[in-house]
Image (tube, rainbow, N blue to C red):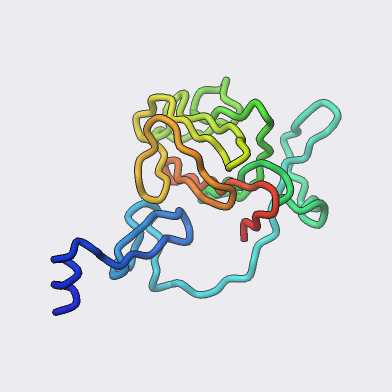
Length: 176
């Protein structure tokens, strides 16, 4: 109790980082308020093999190439690992970047009523990915804070887009 009072008086509190969404939380919290990760169930899990989209001569197909996990490591390629409640998939990000939203003209379409028509854009930079909010109703969260405007997300870091977790991949970054 004395330690908590001393920390409160100094304005300094111990924090921890949510392993699922990257939100910065108070150390005594057992559930992440951003993605509802339960720290009490924090048991080590075996790493999962990443999925990548099957790309044919005519562009992306509507199937996932499960054998691609044994190929080139995704950590050497610029992209993002997208995790939702129903799928984990790696998506390449070109030099021009990608747009994410509910509208069909986006590069990545997320079918959730919480996602805006044009939600955000992600463009690679030498320091990571530049994430730009496109005036969304429910902004993405980076380290538990709303992304308004632009922010550079380092390779290996994660953002939360209305429950869809995006981990930025790039040279020498391991997503697991």
